[in-house]
Image (cartoon, rainbow, N blue to C red):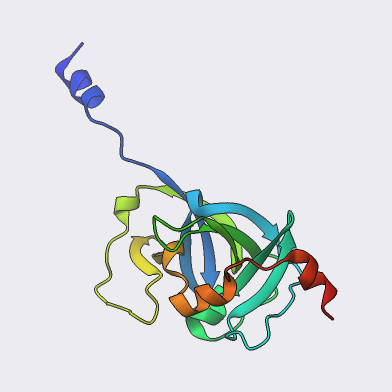
Length: 178
């Protein structure tokens, strides 16, 4: 074995991760695929009275009530456009390591592509955006900047209590109401 071959074998390949890509308006964003439970077409939702405008509603999924937020409305105050590429993406939401993992629906525009890259390619962008802590580091490529959305940071304590009440919503009670 040559010295060059030995060195190439000794170098570990870069850690690769899969990301689901989507857009909010003309801006590109990514969710780590390990946080995605399922990608569904956009479905009818039951609205939640007096919830913030970006809370799109709830729907029944495999016997459970799943809250859904519109990430475009949360981020920029404009609801996601109803396109054929707009999806309802179920993510595994966990506020912290001690909390139970819950399903949370996200309405995402143009959620049709994936990217495999090294997570270390995403770099801090220099702003401490306390109004949107879920907007993480950015990665530059030929199409511009791609921003990582961190699922665990999507909901503040007040909205988390609204969407994930204790005890959980009963699906039968939800269906009985007009």
